[in-house]
Image 1 (cartoon, rainbow, N blue to C red):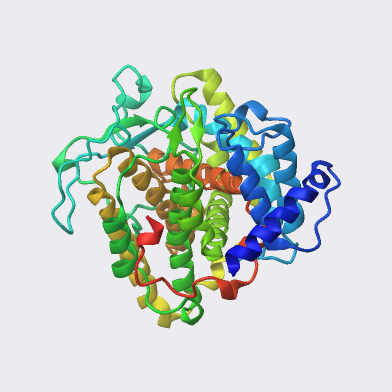
Image 2 (tube, rainbow, N blue to C red; image 1 turned 45 degrees about the horizontal axis):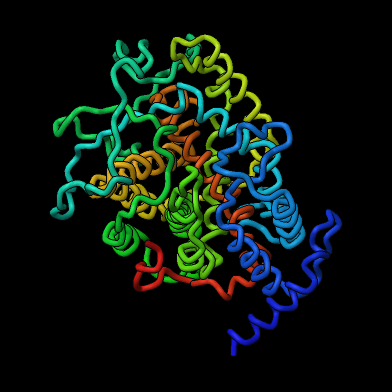
Length: 460
């Protein structure tokens, strides 16, 4: 019966489709039908991809091949009109529409410009770590899984001679230095005894589908390292942990669906079946992506003076200057100027010290699980994003003034924090523009899973 009504709605949409081509689109009813209509229309144009381009920063979007202009206008109007202002990101104080608008107009083009610069495109990673939890097979040999690390002459020369990766900022004379201790670390330190660290060019290897089956890894993350019970029954601290992991997972799956295959012309083909199965079927996954994005932005705003005064030194004066200017622009955007997530409400009860220790240990376990990923490209992006979230957690919850922590961030932590925000930002744009996410995706929380499902095979 559901299929019958879907067909009826789709036929009606085909008849009224010309009404959607004006910029004055008005939608009051038929929310599910609208989503179905735009989704089916996009299927017909599956060789057109991705980002709706910003007017001012069009060349800096993470574009693969352009949508038809009419489809871009339809998708943008439907999305903007379909999300009501009162739809607030869970556990935050900002509407989804505000996040989408600020991301599209300001944040996303800036982050994509930053990702192209030398400082942010080279990520230092340990690719030879051994899985501490179970015996793993040899590394995946599929063409999409393997990567080449950077040659010595590709890495900024000034990075090779450094004895420390600490952020380079001006320190006041009366400043009492703070140092990371084991209890302050939210991610496990890389084990250099099993092999050297290598630099990977993230621009050369964009996140996307590799054919790797990550079910065992994700099952371990959710079943062993997430708090138990329904989301509604969790305290705030437990909900935040789950939303961060779920939001990261949603972003990864969005990239897999969006960057799924490459056609004969070198353009990305989107996989709508993966989107339906792994993202759309549970609206909370997209809401958690928005939450994780705001969480990262909040951490960046807490160390704003550090990010503003950091040199971003690569030896290329022009690119270093551009990096400082773009970071300055990013920190002036509305979402970073407004405290949309209030971390002060967490861990402020002595009785919650145990939860904080569990929170930290669970996340450290997740960082160790990344060594169990046997796809090289997947390992790079899992380590990058876990470190990005771990850096945000360290900034917000280490119990020390954020500025003290900020002055002792490692270069890799700064890179991971910014680039992870960029990955989440792109996912929001991909969902809005390529998959026609509409109002039904965000409303009716009762339709979403209220707790982690018993099996996560649908997520992989």
